[in-house]
Every structure is written in C-alpha cells, then in structure tokens.
Length: 602
View (cartoon, rainbow, N blue to C red):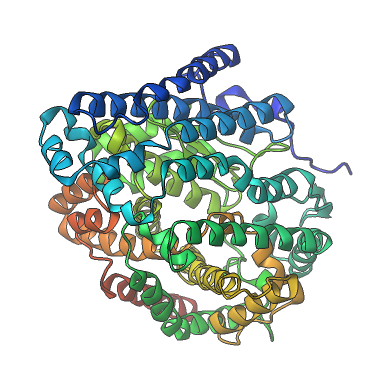
C-alpha cells in the first residue's frame, strides 16, 4: 500500500491558498517596489543632524521615516509569506533575504533619529507635541523619550542596526533545519496506511486510539531531534547569548527586563504568573489522574495527553464547516465582526493546508497595507485545527480593527494583548460547543477535555516555557555554560515540577525544549499565559454583561498600539498588574476539571 504523502505546493488548489495580490499583483511588481525603497533610503541623509533645528524639519523627517517603514513592512510581508509557503523555493528564499537586508539597511540609515529626538530640549519637544499636525505621532514620540536611558550615541546605534541581520542567524538556522532538512520518516496509521510523519500531523498521531501507534510516532518524531540535538542546543545557546549582548549594550540589568521594557510591563507581572501557576499545579494533577484512570493506564506518558477520553466520538469537520462554526460561536461579537471575518476566511485570507516545505504551525500576519493573512495546516480530523482557526481569526480581526481605526504610527499592537484576542475566541468557541452538545454526554466530555487541554497547553505549558527561558538566560547572565546537558537537565526539572510527578518523563521529552521556535524570540511565550488569563476574564464578562462589554472589548481591539498594553486591557475591564485574572483562569480550569470528572462518572 502506497504511503499518503504530503502534497507539493503545486498540488494545493488556488482557492485553498491565500491571495497575496492586495500586496503585489506579481513578483515583478514586488521587485520594482523593492528597488524604489532601496533608492529612497539614501534620503535619510537629508535629515541627519537636523531634527532639532525646527519643527518643520522634525515633522518632515517623521513623515519620511513612517513612509519608508510602511513600505518596508509591505515588501517584507510579501516576502516572508511567500517564503513560508515553501521554504525550499530558492526564489522566495532570495526575496526573504533581500527583504531582511533592506529592512536592516533602512534601520541603519534611520538609526540616528531616536538619539537626535532624545537630544532635543524638553521645552522644544513639549511645544512641538502640542501641534495638531503631529498628533498621530505623540505616543510614538513618548515611547522614544522613554527609551532615553537605553539609547546610545548615533554611531553606536548605527552599528547596532547593522547587526540586525547577523543577529537573526541562530533563528534562521533553526528554522531551516526544523522546516526543511529534518525528516521524520513514515508510520502506519490506524487504517494500516503508511503515512509520512510531519510537524503538521504529529498531534493527529498523538490522538490515535492505538497507544502503540502514539508511542511509535512520539519516539520516532523525537529521534529526529536526538540526531540533531547538539546542533540545536548550540543554536539555542547562541540565541540566548545574543539576547544578553543586546541587553547589556542597552544598559538593562537582565534579558527579562530588556524584553519587558518596550511594553512597559512590570517584572512582577512575569514573576506573579510563575508563582500563581505553580500554585495551581494540584488542579492539573487532579486532571492527569482523571485522564490516567479514564484511559485505564498504570502510568501516564506525554503521548497519552492528546487522545480524547471518549474514544467513540469521532471528529471530522471540513474547512468550510469549520468557518461556519467559528462564525456562529463568535456571534456575541456582533454582525460587523462576523461578516468581515467570514468573508476573509473564505475569500483569500487563509493558506489552509499543509504542503511540502511549508512553515509549520500557524500564525496571523500582515501589514497596514494588506489583509490580515492566516497560515495554517488544517486537518479536518483534528479538533485542534478548529481551535487554531478561531485562534488565528482572533489575531486577524484584532489587526483588521486596529488598522481600520488607528493611523500607521499606532496600528501595531503588542504580543501581550494579541494573545488576548486569540484566546478570547477560543473561550467563546468552547462555550458554544458545550451548549450545542449539552445533551450529548460523550461530546460534552470530549469538548471539556479539549478545553482543559487548551488551557493546560497555554496556561501551564507556556508558563513552564517562560520559567525555562528565565532559567537559561540567567545561566548566561551569570557567565555559566549553556550546554546541551545544562539545557536538558533544566528542562527535565521543570517537567517534574509542572506535572507534579504524575507524568512519566521519557528521555525524549527532555528534548522538547529544543523544538520550540518561540525560544528564538526571547520572553515571548509568557504572553500566551497572561493572554489566556485576560481572555477568560473578558469572555466571562461578555457572556454575563452583554452589549456594554461587547463595546468595551471591541474598543480595546481598536486601540491597536496607541497605548501601553496593560492600559489597553484596563479599558476592556481587566487589570493584569493584579493577580485576579490569573486566579480567575486557574479557578475556571479547576471548574472544568470537576465538570469532566462528573461527566465521566455519569
């Protein structure tokens, strides 16, 4: 019997791909636009050393800088989306490298601006900020002034800007190895068909009712990482060293403080999250015990955490049906939200299915001048794909509302609030599905299990990742070695803490930390956990308070990056500087676990 292979890009129907023509109608148009940017970068020289001379020059320089930045965003977005369609395509790999290069050169050419703005006397800058013609830049300028203690002289800033492309090498090496060069072999599925194992279908194999298939897929998948563990460990170590280099250059006390500074996030938000979630481990332990007993197992392994606890419930939802389900679940957000989203999900926003060489996982990405595109690898037989779709739809509608409401200078929101929008949508989906199947015991248990696992993977798992990041960065900051042995031992210790001794820690699982792309963007993952905390609180508010909360929530999404993220969330009705939102999420998790226990006992 022939193996079911991952299709080539050319085998994917055009209606199942995203439509990038709103960005550029052709590669030639992209190339011409790219050349225009290259030629325009030199115009920065006309403003160098003159920003404080007059208000007119100051404003003209800002207008030019925003225009160049917007154009760079456009060419970069097209290049990275094309590159992610098929990593092995040499022409788009070239586009991506050119886009990275021009972004670095533009940053280098404009690197004098922030130091010069910071050198303008306070009296002058305060007077200029009152001019109505510069209103759209006020928050942007405020943030630049805030960076004054961490900004260096113009020449050093130019050198740092020049280092940007080089500094991304560790991430690029890992990305190419993980997406293109790494092979996982084939495995027979439950129907006896030989299937190619991939990032895209790994979780599907983890949901197979046959434990031997799950175990084989798990070990075979991690064999690829075992074969490359020294290379990936060196890559991860290099990325952490890069973080520490930039933190020190910017005069930050630690990599964590450096990462939190730009969004004005207190370090206590991070530490409180770690403390609170570890206090919530008993609820996770209770769930693991329920899962072990329901599966009739003596010991629980990682490959036992994804299988539905109600095996007779089969899930199969084609993409078009998944879109309709998402729209129905999001009805509380109003007609405009759902009609715009439905059109986007069916008319060109989404690159739907896996193909050879395609970027793994899923994301929402775009720029001010494009639709908010979604990359995913949709699997009709995997309920996680439905949740992924509505998750990325949350990001995309956040982008759509922010772009519609804010000027270019304020449209870009931080990841801290982005994960609220996506997880909020997932919470509404779970509520919708639980109501729809309330009289169906098996389906209720199935959905409860999925919602519990969703929170487990975002709240507990991402917090574990966050603690791991803090630990490995602390090693480098203390001038200690960050070898493969140190990395895996650190991670194994956290696995034992966060699973409360209720999960058998296979040696292969200790390499999980080597396959997480987000670790190449320092201190990113904690925002998934803070995001789910805020999202659960806000979703509960919407379901109980109705129209007024809907307006507050959509108003929050429309703020984009016009205020700091914690302040934006306060307008929606949640204060992340307090522990209440985290506790609310943990209490909700505990309620779901108890409801699952009762449902299975019926």
